[in-house]
Image (tube, rainbow, N blue to C red):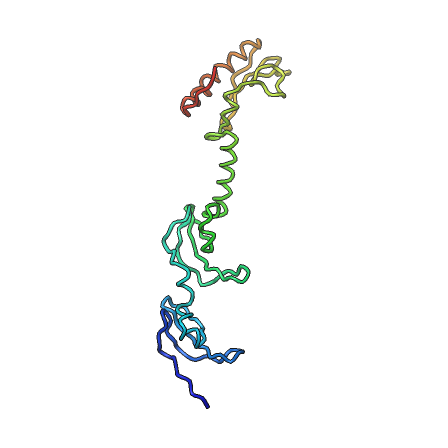
Length: 216
């Protein structure tokens, strides 16, 4: 019977052979090795001696621990891998700026849209949508810069309507989710004046703070 050299105790790159395993289905001898990173790895004799097997695979995946990707800080490399077709992808446990813990693959960490937890991504998408619509601090600048009455308005002045029960003209101003009632007036002109004063006090001050120049 042919005698084979024992590889137990020998080092191949980052792998140290610990014991012989049963041959695989093709009759190749297999060895159980411990990688310097701590993981166990099975390798054939030929792959060890030829230099094709020098680590458990950690050489191919750089250590990302402590690095920041967008809002994610990598905490540690996970034991589990994710299958994507024939590929086995390394996974990392990450902490989002909001404190949530999530798992990401190495390639997904380089995609900016995925460099945050799902909750932060949702809030970011909503914020971008509001920004695209012209919202600043919860206020749509185009709406307060243009006081043209809406189609539903019947008085001809935004923020002024006729209260049928009181039989008076009522003025109001809505700003940043708050409704300010400006009083009830017997004359339409007085209600309009109250609305205009409120616009000057609230809207114009806000626009100046935002450094927005409006055309008169």
